[in-house]
Length: 147
Image (cartoon, rainbow, N blue to C red; front, side, top):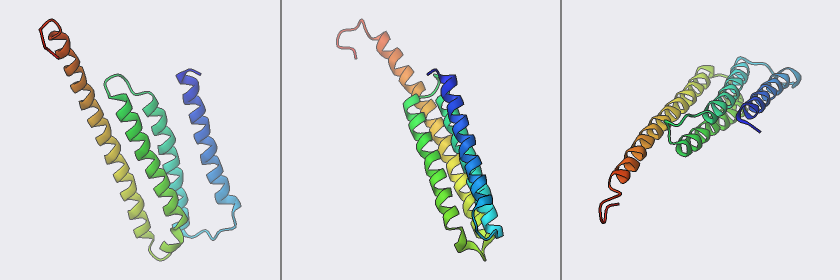
């Protein structure tokens, strides 16, 4: 399978997961409080961010250290999605404190964004350092004892 088909498969999977979440919202016999509606919206946002992020990570160019960037960003997005899922499952605890629930969700979004941006910056710097090291080795190749 080529990269375009893999991206299409991931996009279709993401649409299916979001559709199932929306269907569960309407089909489950759960009291629709304001915190529950915020929780479902946060969960849908995290699903969209997760699948869109995975698709974007798969298309990282050669100016990043691919292994570091792909693994780090994937783990960060996965932790964000799982944390949002857990927070959604515990949303009943925030019935009287909707603002705290929203603040926790915003903190999760900010932490994930900072982590992914930091990982991408470090992976780009690592790639530049690796390229510089490879070019130094190429220059020293003819010298005796050079490494």
